[in-house]
Every structure is written in C-alpha cells, then in structure tokens.
Image (cartoon, rainbow, N blue to C red; front, side, top):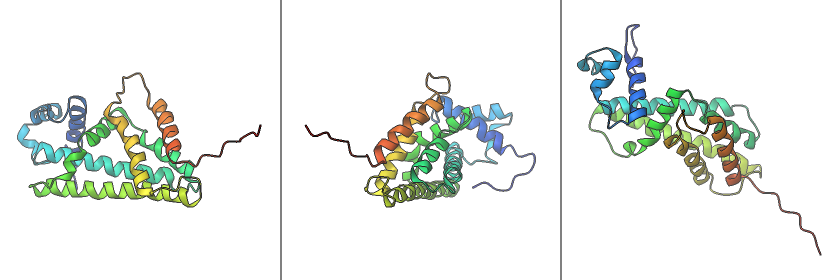
Length: 211
C-alpha cells in the first residue's frame, strides 16, 4: 500500500510511466528497465518504490478499483430514482482521460491475477485490497439493482447476478476501446446504457387490439 511520500518522491511518475507502457504494449512485453528509463532513474531505484513489476501492476489495479468505487458513489449519491442512478453510474464508468482508459484496460486484462495468493507480502497486501474493493463494488451495484427491484422498475431477478452481468458488460469495453478508434466514449456510454436498461428494466405490456 502507498506510504507517505516526500516532495521528491517519484512514485507517481513511476506509476504513470508503468500505466503508459502496460496499457499500450502490455504488461508482459514491458521491460522494468524501460519504465526506469522513462522516469529517468536507474532500474535499481525502482525497487525503493516497488519490489517487482508485478507489485507495481497490482498497485495500479488497486488504485483503479478504488477510483471506480469512489466514482460510483459520487455519481449515485442522493439519486433516489434507480433508473437515473444506473444511468449516472454507467456514465461515470466512462469518464476517463487517455491514461485513465489505459489504467482500466490494465485492470480488466489482469483480473485473473487476483485469484492466486502472492508469495510477496507487499504483493499479497495489494491483491487482498483489490479483492475487497471488487466485493465492495459488486455490493454497491447490487444494492442499486435491489432498489430498482423493490420499486418495481427493475425485473425481479437475483440482484447480485444481475449486477455482475451489468458490470461485465460495462467493463468489457476496456478490452477493445482505443482513444484513437472510431467509437468515442460518449457513443459507447449511450449504447451500453441502452443495453443495460434493456437488461434490467421492467417492460411495459404491449397494447393489444381485439379484432
């Protein structure tokens, strides 16, 4: 976990450089020395901040999960209507700078890393923090779905399963989205919001005409 940093700490610039490289060419294809070169320090100096490349990766993942949870809470705070809250939550998920989009790609490309305990204490601490944040995020989305069910505006289905399905659709975007691609985040937000609402919202019965 992050400790108190001096004004001369290079921790943030190391993380930014790692996000740029992990997100652009992949974690496996990024050499730790390349990150050090971009920051302008020797490779051994990286170990003052992170004991390994994997430790840095897990830290990036934990930071993104923490940011996602905070964004969800900010977007939905005080929004009583479940449909409006769901729309706000989805919109907040796609509010991202180019580097933030890379960070989200990194997170969702490496979620399997959270399933296996780490031998290093510092890596394991980050992994456990990530897993707790994942549980908190799922719980918050499930509670939103549950409110919609209780008010009769969302389909009466298991809210945890439904929340996971919605989240799965929302986060899947980061595997293929590119900032220089043909589809903007605004367009993605519109399409994903419509798809999620179709998944959860109670449909009004069709009017039938008797012949």
